[in-house]
Amino acid sequence: MVRITVSDMDKVNPDDTLLVIGLAEDEKMDYLRQNAKFNEILEYIDNFKEEHLSQIKKYGKSMIFGLNFRGSWIKVMIIGIGEMNKLTSDRVRHLAGLVSLKCKEFNFSRIAIPPFYSEPRYLESMIEGLVLSQYEFDDFKDARTGNQQNLSYYDNCIITIITDGSQRDYTQTQIDKSMAICEAVFYCRDLANSPPNVMNPDALAASAKSLESIQNITVEILDQTQIKELGMNGIISVGKGSENESKVIVVHYNNSKTDENPILLVGKAVTFDTGGISIKPSDRMDEMKFDKSGGCTVLGIMRAIGKLGLPKNVVAIIPAVENMPSGSAYRPGDIIRMYNGKTVEVLNTDAEGRMILADSLSYGISKYSPKCVIDFATLTGACIIALGTNVAGIIGNNDKLIQALEYTSKITGEKIWQLPLYDEFLDLLKSNVATIKNIGGRTGGTITAAAFLSHFVDNIPWAHFDIAGTAWTQDGTAEKSYNPKGSTGFGIRLMVKFLEDNQEFL
Ligand code: BES
Ligand code: MG
Ligand code: ZN
Image (cartoon, rainbow, N blue to C red):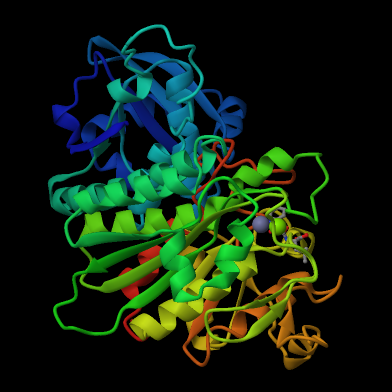
């Protein structure tokens, strides 16, 4: 993984370093010119042909060139930041990612970059862009030819953020923080990108167990016998068709100074969703390896808050199952008594996510009496129809909680949009033979799925993220330098920031 350091300009060795300078269309970058060296370089650039310069200053454009600086040859990259007054945290993140990708393309492994923005709060986004863009999933790429250890570009890459002395401590603190979060995003991406023949419920549980090496984290794995004994028949039913045993992963993070009740996180981890007996069409079924993304996101969140040492108590429940068709699979028509005693008429075995989330939510709420509950799930294709592949759906029973999450999401660039949970949607789940049925018809699919979940959360403040469109890059996903192909880790940065900031709910 890339290393990020902090230094002032005088300590950077220009001989082996690529200097990155952001140029805006509508600003002269006065804050950079305060440094004598940068001022000299900028004056050199000022002499470029105006029509040329105005092209490079456009948002996302870049150019690399050499210049003779005080008698030695230095390498400079200009990154165009467009109009300074249009700069947002997400633009900073994307631009920093572009810088990182260009450096990789031309194999520059020593990079120095002064902030290309004037607002200190953008530092976090810059680090995220520099690091997150460098993710690659290559665990399975090489034929096994002995134990060759080829150091990748990333392991050799050092990016130095240039600051003056006064910002040094702030910058270093932010680097440490952002690196912990980026590592957690990489961890989530690795898990979610892993193929379904490898990353089955047992392997996911084993990986979660390894989080115990982080202080204040303990991990409990409930096996199939325990799940059955507890009466979590929704989970048992969905997993019945698979040769791979279902697991429920419970991660405890205990670091509050008081013995306050925890926050509960729940993440759907269907390691492969064939649809079961209500089998899916084969076209792009491979993408259903990403149906474990909610669980992977929650594991990423736990890893990040553990590394950061947030003073909180958080419990995470991740039901891990594989949804397969077989002689032992659950069927349409089955009626299942869930953990909380309600019964569910299964009308489509492909609506499996809500079955496993329901048990996890009601189990978590009755066992841990949380202050609030937040779940992440690739729950409905309907969410992609409604909101596309760049925005996650959010639904819940507490508008204040959702507003707080919306506020944080604007900072982290993980876009969300609330859908309404009106009573009418609950009516669509009425069953003739059970408390409810597991599908609500063709209309409003994302909301009826959430309405189903609401039967299992009582009155605890609850928010549900449907990340079907955003958990991995797919048709229509906007090109973002910091989201390489595959799993995005959507929701981790948002949730970690939320847990850091929002005292009202926590
Ligand atoms: N995992 C899918 C939802 C999904 C589909 C996520 C495509 C991402 C991309 C979920 O288990 C599912 O199959 N949902 C059904 C529900 C339906 C049967 C009511 C769906 O969306 O079609
Ligand atoms: Mg399904
Ligand atoms: Zn699913």
